[in-house]
Amino acid sequence: MSGSAQIVEGERTLPGRFRLDASRYRPIFEGKRSFGGQTVVLWVRRAPDAGRRAGVVVSKRVFRRAVDRNRAKRLMREAFRLSRAWLVPEVEVILIARAGIAGRSCQEVMADLERVCRRARIWEGRGPEKGGPA
Image (cartoon, rainbow, N blue to C red; front, side, top):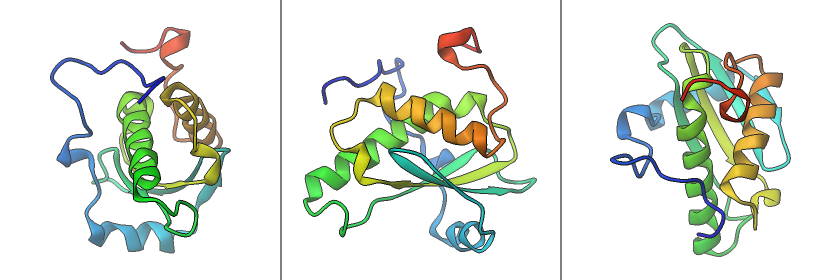
């Protein structure tokens, strides 16, 4: 995958404890709080037991080939994993891939995710490029 962010030693994927269970998707969608970006649509739910978890959705209608769907999922998971430290603690999100994610690098997806999170008011850090937590 060209243009991907550097991977932190020991963590190559989004750990299971940070992924949403299928049973948690419905309450997030029922909350009807969504924010769109160029590459992702973010659905948000605040809850005391949330713990900064994310779910990922990629449509077959938007991405016909499985390889394209899988790449979009990897990009969104990696962008979330690298941005997770700057989100408010009591939030659960669902990331839905838009067609604009095709051909984008991880840094571009991360920048779009940060913009969307700021609009949703769930971003509490300044960001890695601006001197935020390491």
